[in-house]
Image 1 (cartoon, rainbow, N blue to C red):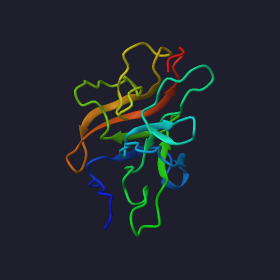
Image 2: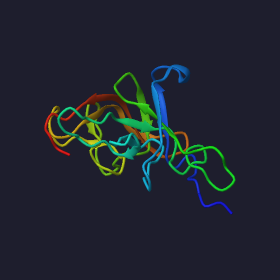
Image 3: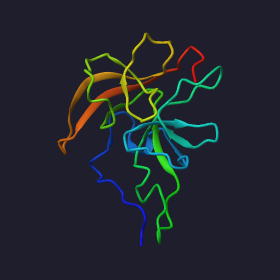
Length: 173
């Protein structure tokens, strides 16, 4: 009997709206850290062991985690092995240095998102939210709102923004 219960494919999602075609998209593959919860569309980064973790911390000195957005959920069968399933163990994420406009379900829905709002991803839950301070401050900037919040084809609440990466300039871990 299997042990994984994958989420419905429309509950958590990432849609690259504009940018390079799928075959030329900048993506990255790595194993998720043990017991890590990462949803499709969620912000993630690499830890010191090269494993994917939810969120994108500020880092320190010359180590500033690169923001990425997960393509699948950690418990999807193509990302995590289950009884009788030989695939899995590695997740994929879109690397977010810029050049993409994306739509994600993973954002703080209690906030207001006007065009040009800077987004941060310092939280460990993988949701993006408006930056609290100015750019080049204590939190990394991972996006800039394009058209803002709305609904996708499945009626789920999504946020549309351009990916960017402005590392935090202070040594906050």
